[in-house]
Length: 146
Image (tube, rainbow, N blue to C red; front, side, top):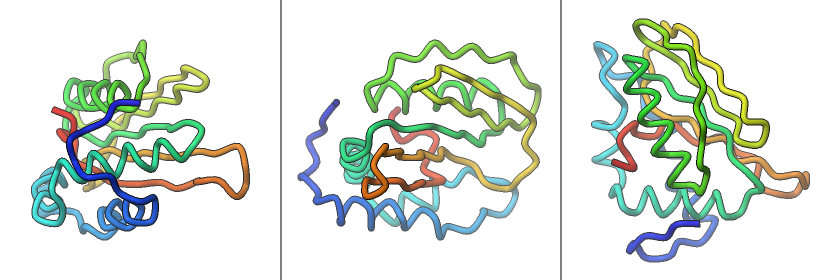
């Protein structure tokens, strides 16, 4: 799993930092969540937190809410690669605002129109063990791994 130059975080610290993104209200005019998120946590520390929780789960699934298919696909590809996946994203293009979903365990991709106000990436950490980490984080900034 890739690492960063950010100080190591405990699982509890990483979880707490990432759960802050759950409380960010949709911005007026469907503006991406990243601008609001930038003031809450340093981007480097946010990336480190996501890498930490991913390390404590068996695999991750991704959902992306974006203004365009291209923006969503680019964000999804960067997140997947940052968490150690080499995705072959086989989506049919969708016009307008989109929701894209990728399950690296099955390789399945899904894309559809999206009319919601949120923008960003949802990362669902999955563990086979009931006592393992099973959490959804987001909406994280689309450009977190730019």
